[in-house]
Image 1 (cartoon, rainbow, N blue to C red):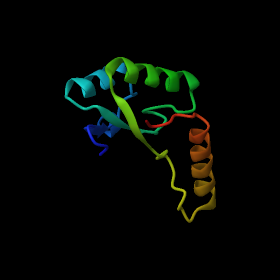
Image 2 (cartoon, helix red, strand yellow):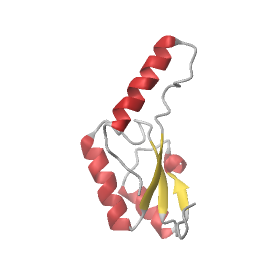
Image 3 (cartoon, rainbow, N blue to C red):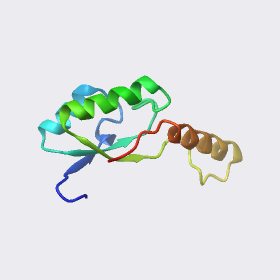
Length: 102
């Protein structure tokens, strides 16, 4: 935890598409930072509009992006080469978003 910040993961809402209401709910419960979970059904980091909207929602709500959980659809440590390559592709796609924690 960064001094003065009390954070929570958006994993709480993993079964749903992340939206402004989730960020507002987080803020209303006293959290000042989030870990965004990069799971495309939850938060589509490949969609530039979704990245911009998340930044806007955080700004409006006064919540900081503390960290981003790496894409969870596949494992870069998988012994299955196809799974591992898909995971590397997802991590590379996320890195191109320029979504940076503050």
